[in-house]
Every structure is written in C-alpha cells, then in structure tokens.
Length: 199
Image (cartoon, rainbow, N blue to C red; front, side, top):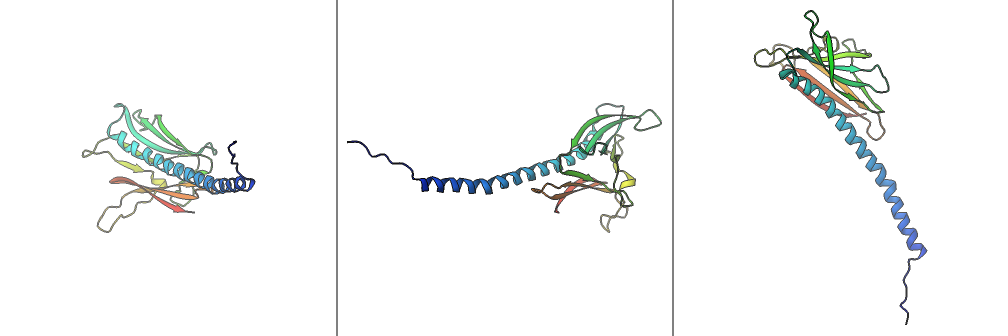
C-alpha cells in the first residue's frame, strides 16, 4: 500500500501569505521607527559627550600648550552641519591663535542644529558655543558659554549670582522621529541636561 501524501491547499497557502504580509506591513515600519529613534537618541548623547569631553580635557589637557577646549557649531556645509571640539593654543596675545580638531559630531539627513543669539536670531556658519579654560582655579576649571548666544539667569532665588547657561536645540525632522532635543549647558557648576519634545 502507498502512504497517502498530505499537501497544503491553495486556501491554506493564501492564509499564510496574508499573515506574513500583515506582519511585514506593521512590523517593518515599527522596526524603522525604533531604529530612527535610537539613532536620534544616540546623536543627542554624542553631542552631550562633546561638551563633557571639553570639560574633562580642560582638567587634563593633552599638553601644557593648550589654553582651552572649545565647542563650535559649523554650518558651512549645509548638507552636513556639525559640532566640533577643538583644542586651542595661544601665541601670547590671542588665546586661540591656532587650534586642532579633537572630535566632531556630524548630523544625518533630516537632522538640524538650532542655536539662537541673544536677539533671537539663529547663529550662522561657524560660531563658538562654549569654552573650557585649562587654567585651574580653586581646584577646578571653568567652562563659559559664548556671551553672544546666551543670557545669564538665576537658577534659583537662593543663588545670588546669575549662572551662565546655553540652550542648544538638536532637531530630527524624520517622520519616524519628529522630535526636538534640548540640551541645557550650565557653566557654574558645570552640568548638562537633555530634554525631548515631540514636534
């Protein structure tokens, strides 16, 4: 006797194909959203680490000739705006007569940086955001935001002296993310926080 062979019917195959199609239709976009969200969060952390690195290096400079570490915004190539961390060298009259790039964070397509001046206008091309001097005062170094693009404020009524701060906006307009990352950089004492907002 021959064993009876069992095969899938056309209806069963169609049902399986429909299930696979539904999983792909809902699963792939969700996976893409997750990937883009992860990229955006990582980029915000990279930018944060650039400021932290400026502070850290100012306490332990690569050599004695470095006078400060500066974080710049560079929008000269509008297709690839970026943050740059530079080490500055003095010639006696200028604290940053020459500089060397230490690290940079380049943004992806759909991402943008927004930094505003005191008069509310956006910063154009290249501008200094924050400088951390290597000069140690009272066992610590001081990081100062660019006074043209920040306003001193009182953090709390208990603090008599205003503390300088700077807000840097990093926005991801990708349809899967559509979020605004607000980095608040405080100089005295130094700290940095990140807040996210849906657009």
